[in-house]
Amino acid sequence: MPLGEIVANLEPAQSPGRKPYTGRFVSLNPVDPENDLEELYRNSHGTDTNTRLWTYMAYGPFSDPAAMKDWLRDCKSSTDPLFLTVRSNDLDQCVGIVSFLNINTGMRTLELGNIWYSPRVHHTQTNTETVYLMLSEAFDARGYRRVEWKCDALNARSRKAALRLGFSFEGIFRQHYIIKGRNRDTAWFAMLDCDWPEVKHNMEQWLYSASNQTSLTKLNQSLLRPPELKSPQKPVL
Image (cartoon, rainbow, N blue to C red):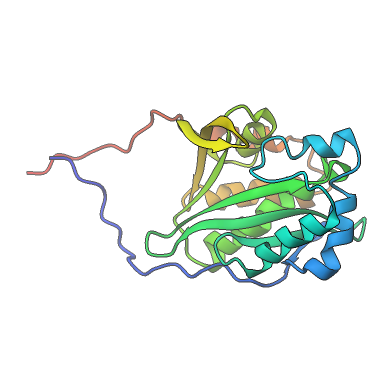
């Protein structure tokens, strides 16, 4: 009967660090409800455009700053998900939240999720560098084999972002959740450790090379695996 390839390194991964991560365009920091609340609330509430960013989230928008502060306190105390505040270096303001979650150190897998940003930083380097810093932590520093990205199957923006960032689409989990009283089918994406070196190179080229004019989508397109692709199996004699 066919068997999977032997995994040479069976050492568990390490949990991501609750620490600052500093890039050229963003800084990621452990959640600080007292200091983060005002900017996060202002940059994610008060307009129709801001309200729309919560459409596919399991929480929000919040009725008032106090309600958001309660949620941020829960984020601060949580270890899985491990939440981080995203700060725009250009704006010098908190503009979003991200997290590491579903952390399985034994299987060396985790997910990037609970990702949202203020519309003020949409179509900037914010998401790309944020994900770059998180993937570097997972693959380079902590020894993970697989990083996942999941979203509502109707969330076209998130699905497009996953592919652009080098995550391969793996399929739809139908009737996966009930979110805010509505059905959610979940689109499932993943990146493997063997994908990361080239994705990392492409991200660095797009983020930091002044001469680069190629879209990140195009740079990563050849790396994406079709969902039906399977590893070749060798017969067991």
